[in-house]
Length: 168
Image (cartoon, rainbow, N blue to C red; front, side, top):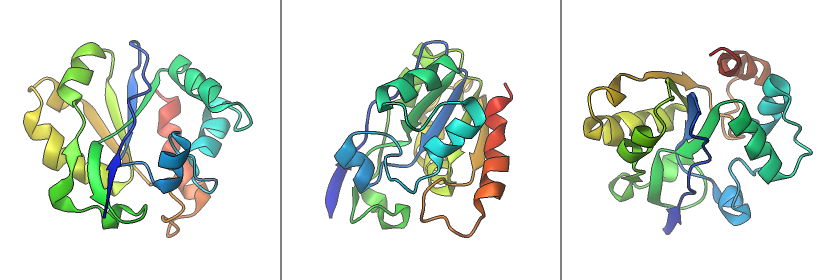
């Protein structure tokens, strides 16, 4: 098993929406970029929904996300996992990121969108019990995973659900 360490959040102080994955996959960890796998639909969705070109350098795509009020992070800061699949995460090794601190400094966050079921499940298991009551009431929305491993739902259906990001 490999110990995976996530990335710091990408977030402007004015962010209103936080998009949370579970833990970056191997390709993303190697590239040190969120959603770096070429078949992950996250950045193509951001191009269609927010006009953020997938041809832009990563740093510019992140800046455009922030300009649109969207923050990126993962529920887990560390975990043991063989490979990239969420199903391979060892439950006992999961360590959540510091959301209490993050939400205290990002007070404009009004909703959290989970990029897949695993992120949502881990949020409820590890994060919600540690949040103060006000933070625990932030609206949460589970979206279909943009991972290439989530092939049971069509791209069009996924994109339709991800359109929620364009509504504040």
